[in-house]
Image (cartoon, rainbow, N blue to C red; front, side, top):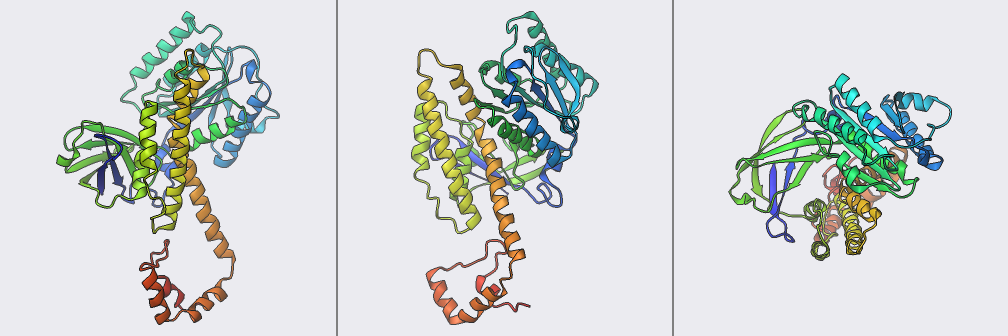
Length: 429
């Protein structure tokens, strides 16, 4: 099923949401297994002298933790003025101490190492590229040549398995250069930035979670217009149309996933637009100026976030509303600072990272909600609640239940979708 509605805070944009069949989702298979397929993740870590101390320790700690959790021996490229491509997360986990951080930074050496690696291993790759500084010779011919050679190789791989560069910036780095790196691949990557070394652990975890679970979908409308979107959700795929797309004349669309499986969907206008749909749409908007931010905030404040009858949906709606509100406040602060005569590089970096924040927020929110459900399930598995249920059964008669239903028509268990009175009147052993 595919439905759309026009965004109230936008003149022309539509939000389209596709409900995925179970066979496309996670039935019997983890999303990570479906998403990554044969994709290999490679960590590229800056080990120059400025990373010494807490920064390199925090990076090594999170990489060890990732190995312990996944038991996957991902490659680790450590670079300063030279690149060591022989390491893996397993060898790092087994060694005593952290990676040694010393010397300067030569991006030419890591770009050349990546190029040589891709020549020998032309399969799907995701590079998580981390740096905390600038090149020793940022305008030198050696760096320019290494970038040109890597780009030349990647330009010939557009029909090959995807290559993606995700970037983590830390400290005194250059916004334009790091955004250039994340666009090197055949798919655009994401960007994270932090000013404190303790945030590096969260950034690496975020990137790994995304890289393990993301799936790419290509959507073709019956008009011929094509959109590409990424999703970490097993159940839905959502995207925004361009301003000039009139969906009132579009009746169907085709969705192709990253396993090249194609499915056709009828496209209809959404009749029951719930708060969750409105917030999913707002979450995809990346404001371009302060006025745009204000219009989003104004509309955000009109959304009734407590109307959902589904408990889990209401929890998600409340969290999304809070996240979007906080994000818009950050946008306003950054746009105000951009009006300064000389804009600090840090402001540009924070703005670039903020534009990718909704993607990571989605993953973190889903993880928290799943954890909450699992904790509740675990509690009831370990707790004898037969006495509580018997008490409810004895105290609620059919007449009493009818009186309760007059106050609220739908008393349904959100997990089983069964009438709660019927559940209470079951015979418990």
